[in-house]
Image 1 (spheres, rainbow, N blue to C red):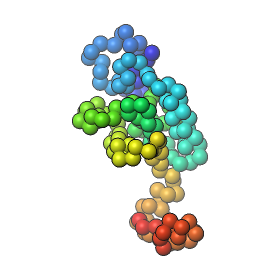
Image 2 (cartoon, one colour):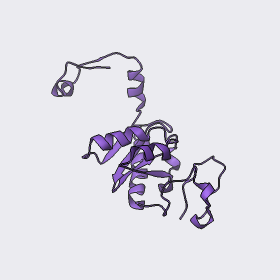
Image 3 (cartoon, one colour):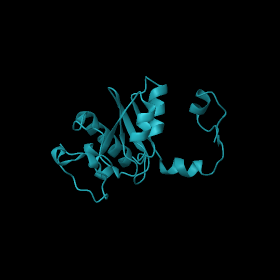
Image 4 (cartoon, helix red, strand yellow):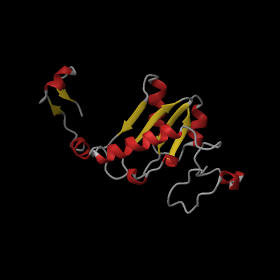
Length: 160
């Protein structure tokens, strides 16, 4: 089994038996080997689909999937086309201080952590930055009700 080491970090992949206690930093947190491999593969496929459909440009956005004891989340800045199951992090739920200390290098872990904590029914989170939605939000203008679904959602406009 290979631990996660961010691409471009200059640290080569090594087997678990070759790691010493000083190698903790920059390594995926599954110290017993990568768990939830099937779920990791599904999350990678979902990210590649998001990219292919234009939900994200380059390495923007991220995704997570709830698993027993926590959730799997993509690393910030990871190009979806090159992503592997080994590039996915596991974050344990339940100890906020420990999660904060262990995941400081993941830019948006907190967003996912808080949503899963507040919404036990949430099983996955897709944080996307579609090109046209991002451009529209930069205008900082409300969107008028031009579609019946805006009214169905209970509003006359979409507030920015």
